[in-house]
Image (cartoon, rainbow over all chains, first blue to last red; front, side, top):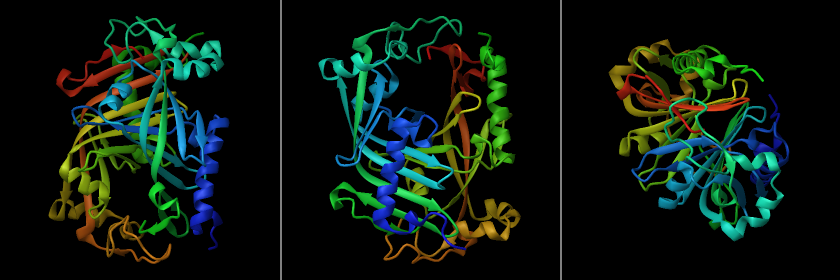
Length: 188
Length: 188
């Protein structure tokens, strides 16, 4: 059987393809790369994973951007440990992408311009009042009041990428910033 | 707007619904719960996340079952830290499920019966030879030879569940084994 995804058989094409999928996620709300899973480690060493929304992808700099409520648990976790992994499973491409990153938390004046560009209806995700995850007496016993000081941006400086393609033959490759993204085949 | 998912507005119904979605994942290869993301922590404290296949779900015991190649990195990570989080984003239900678990690694005689039940073509995922992730000179420079001693079963004893439903109103709840899964509403 021929390979339906020829980009999976060449390290350079595979690397390009990963980034084009990521960039598509920024613009296409239906792309699987729109909603990756962000894994972090809590202060007491427990793995944590949640869906996030991909806001920017810069292949040249190898950075990805997420937005967050600064009161959320993931920010508390990141302040203790700035290492994260972003995970995507793209069923139509039969492709798993794992991106290990160092995270920088941006806030305040650094993110004021992005806040200005946020549509009004999106701003309530960044809120004063009780922090996400706090116990409440009833399911709707909370209010979301937009608060610019709660708005944070996570810049993910990607350090390594692990890509796994499940095709007629399985292929897996690793890429790293230290190796200028040259790539290395791995056992799937 | 009325809630299109009435199960999201009641703690008991929500808990039942989570488990029915998980059980569906065991039997329906197209269900999002079929392919959760498993997050672990490596020995050097880095978060790791990868897609896995859900093999069993037992609501009564609150356990989930995965299969693994015992030579894979996740087993190395779990031998150092048996805490894991399983994550599912179910787009049609607008539901995120996060399950924190203690993992037990089963192997050898304990899993011989499951190995016997594995279809022949599935066995090559558990293989002698180079471990998954090892560098190779070319993309297909590996062989997968079925090896019963490489077959492991991960039993996840779920300790807590965090569920987030994105509807006309957002709702979030936590459940824990310690509280007999009674449930507690949380700020989304």
